[in-house]
Length: 150
Length: 150
Image (cartoon, chains in turn blue, yellow):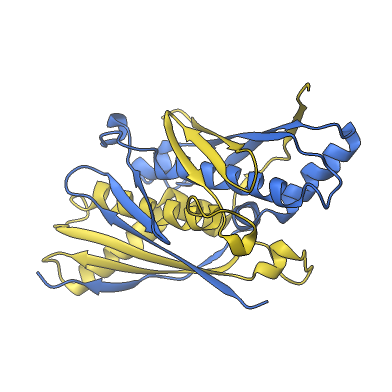
């Protein structure tokens, strides 16, 4: 299989902290709550990261349930992550700006036995592309800058 | 400042690979294209990860431009990432399921000089919570499983 390149674009909306993003024709608005200086017109980027992660686990579960011998009647996942705002807001050098820990609760409706569901959980965690990216880290290249003409 | 805990929930929709997610009252649908077995009703989770990352850079730029001495008239960022689908689809042990590299192009409309914009770029990259999470990795705890009653 060939390497795939995925793309997205995120643009600051006028005033405040709201952002409009687009990827392969789909748009989404993100923002921050008033406590962070935003106007709360959408989920925040750190919340969207959790959504990306949970959605990827759901897609992984749905795509591979049959081949893993799981009759998947329903599946949902609760994701939560701890982040100390002092890293972002104040630049405290002792506090990372990002998440310190992320936890999951997977809800599975199935006839499969407990042991088989636990093996399926481990399969999902090891195969999920967003989970692999976030758990092991990704090489982020320094940005190219384009200074736009006035 | 106290540690903040962010939350999201992602639920498989009936049939196909579509997922509905929610975080603090905002909902979004994600899906996969037909080539991956989905019905293309939304961006995919790996695209949403890029959107989360780009949006977080935009929020960081907007929140700190003034204190960094940048008159930020407009700002947008293009994000792209390389991922080999063989890791996810085939479980090839030599190919990670996640992204191998992510690149950025930041577009800045400002009166500031090139050097000041480059310092601002480095500030954004070091302070962005999603970028820090993804670039350095996060501790992902193994999921708790709840087997739901039929």
